[in-house]
Length: 185
Image 1 (cartoon, one colour):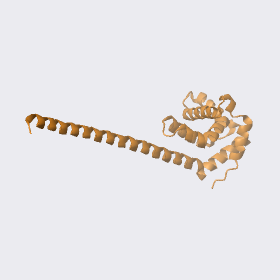
Image 2 (spheres, one colour):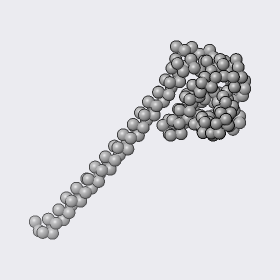
Image 3 (cartoon, helix red, strand yellow):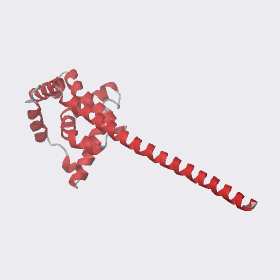
Image 4 (cartoon, helix red, strand yellow):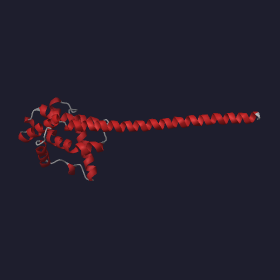
């Protein structure tokens, strides 16, 4: 074999090694991207499950029932702030989860839109009053964000405007009546 032929063969082997190494790198990166996407979906599912379980837990159902009953019997400002905060804190947390991208809007809308939007309609004035009292516009700001996003999603899915999907006082009353009948078990 001539010197020139050996040099070409050596370069071909080196080139094959380089190409093989790059294919291995690309394959590894593809596997990592797939794994990260899979883990994100698994974490989203876990977060969704935890939020759903928290909302439907007997203790939370009891808080919801108590708040709905109090809201139906008394004016909003006569209801104990602790009763309101116990329920609204859930939506504040859910708003944070949504804003951070830990759950997609479609999942949050599907499972929590009705409750969040109706509780905002029932207690939104409480939030406004507390913001003014504390001079703090961040009071329940994640709940506010959540309701804005859910209302936008509702309007989009219905192919209409946000005004046309607004919660009326009758809708709110009907919702509170149903919440006041919740079983805690």
